[in-house]
Image (cartoon, rainbow, N blue to C red; front, side, top):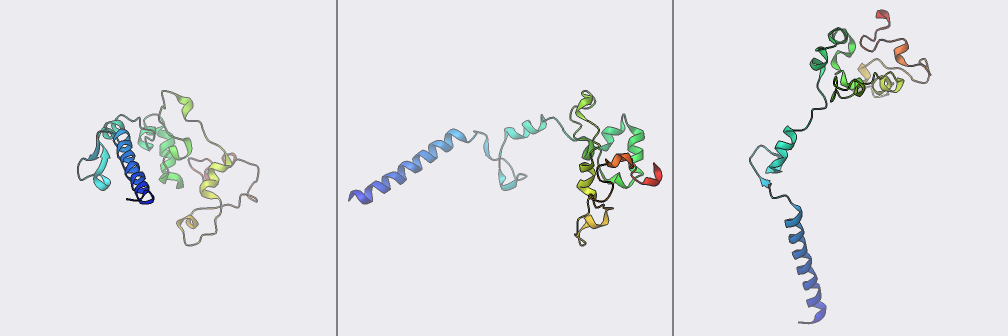
Length: 156
């Protein structure tokens, strides 16, 4: 066989062998098909235990109620009742053991994530009260006029 045909065949065979060896070295031993409940049937079996041992970051409004019942009740009576506390305060992963992990967010930008006017009349976003940030009390934080747990001005 001529070398111009033989050399590319040898290169392809060597590349294939290197690929198989690399896969054997890199893919965990417990990776494969381990039941019907997993997407595409493939997963790493030890991953299940890793996720069971993973520290929960978001705990939900009921967790907050244990110590902050009055704030949760205030929130439940407000238009913000659909939001979890952690949407604004951040994940409660180490709270209350480390109170500094939940700083009170008072920035204007936080409120603008949902309440800045966007011209999308067909979206659900159009149903929310919206402001024009450049003209609605620029330079002020929203919490100076609005209580975030009960944001209606009449209820201040």
